Structures are given as structure tokens and as C-alpha cells.
Length: 167
Image 1 (cartoon, helix red, strand yellow):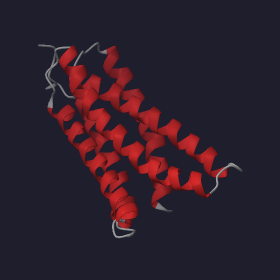
Image 2 (cartoon, one colour):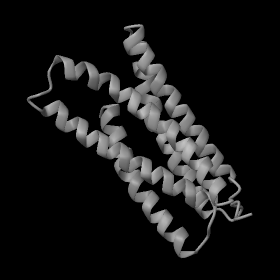
Image 3 (spheres, rainbow, N blue to C red):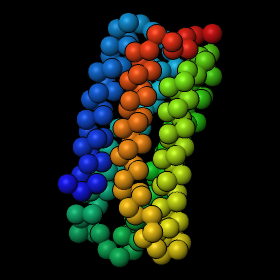
Image 4 (cartoon, rainbow, N blue to C red):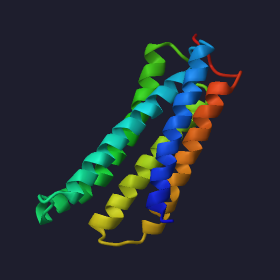
């Protein structure tokens, strides 16, 4: 099984796990930064899923020519990098607007997304600036692993009794 297949498998199953955990947490009616983290991560998964589907259609399209391929390849890394950093911004802004203290799992999720964005940016530079494939194995391995860590952090934050509740 290739790492790309594993990444798709992790993302598909992670969304289900997150939705179930969030539903249970909301039934317990806890307003915490872990719930905010779960909502933001679920939103990011939906955005990434829509992008993956769109890119899949583009790759199979008759209009997928050299110019579009050039833009699409670069856009892939830049889009994921941008959305990963946007997740961090949304986490902190939502916690601030809702006057929630960010608990440990929320902070660690933000750090994981900083790592994901940095990996995407580094891979973009490696592939398109240096015309190298030096980071390809690291990229293929690290993305699914960090995504698994994010899921574990969000789920553990939702079920932790030590969550930072409204100020």
C-alpha cells in the first residue's frame, strides 16, 4: 500500500472518528477549546476533501495540459500549506472570540498544523525551487503520521476532564 493510499484512508476514517467524538462531546454540552479544535479540524478536512476531489477531476480531465499541470502541481502544496496555517489562525481567533482558554490538546493541534504547513512549504521549495526529490520520502511518511497525531489529540481533548472551559 502506498503512502498516498494510506493518507486517503487516514483522512476518510479520521473524519468519521472526529464527527462521532464531537457528537458525544456536544451531547455532554461542554463548551471548551477542544470542541473548537474539533470543529476547525473537521472544517479543514472538508476543505481538503473538496480540494482532493476537484484536483482528481482536473487530473482526469481532457483539459489537463502542460500549463494547467504546471499550475496544479504548485497549487497543491501552496493550497495545503495555506489551509494548514489558516487552521492555526482560526483556532486562536475562535478561542479568543468565545473567551475560551486553549487547553493543551488545542495548543498541540495548532502546533501540529504549523508542522503540517511547514512540511508542505518545505516540500514545495524542495520540488520546485531546488528541483529535487530529497524530501519526498519524508513528506509521504510525515503527513499521515501528523494527521494521526492530530486525531488523537482532538479526541483525547474532547474526552479529557481537564479541558479549559469558558473563562
